[in-house]
Length: 321
Image (tube, rainbow, N blue to C red; front, side, top):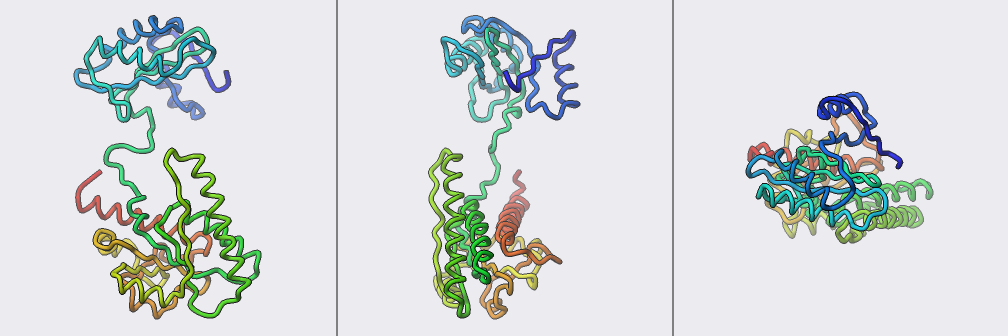
């Protein structure tokens, strides 16, 4: 069975597992085996009861089973049966999301191997108190000046930006020219944006358990957009190499995200955002002092910097994790 290595050794399984974890970087998970029994629900139940002594009073637990081979029961059947046996023996509560301990049942053919580890071995994407970037991005409107020039180049940049905007799932994207533009060049850029968005949406819908919607794309004159945004009370942030380092204005940035329903982030292409817009901005920020970001990477760098700065500022103010 590809990827599975069973190590038989004399002595302490914890010591062997620790040595393997320390030396073998290819091992994705190393489980010390405390019992191995026939792959039978009752045998697994008996072994799980014996191992339940590894739970301290009040500690929560979960059971995780992986079956390899053909059996008359499912992995869920094992989880339910073993969990009931452990609870019957100890009375400890079950926590399927963030348990203190995990009981692993690794079934290989006719044998079930049992292990117990701290809950951190689950390596979940989230945990209690972990910040959620999507709450900030749901307020964020990206105002992107179009990338123009040779048609194939404009299309390729559009594809990359479309994928980036959809990856972050911002509230909306406004393509905002501020001077006359060539229709064919603009069309190539917009076509690329749509292509990139669609390709990323397909991947997200296959990957995410939740529903995914395409990020709305709009076309609007930059100066008229700023007038509209200010009129309805939106925050306006201009990104520029001439701005203040984002870390220096972290508290102001966090305040804007806390007090405004929408935050417009202006991002330039080639020539940057027109300097006249600075007068109407709540902040002019530089996310990478000393660097000029390429158009196809600027949005990703800017959005990442804003998210991390706001989250760090809030944690610093609250003393949170």
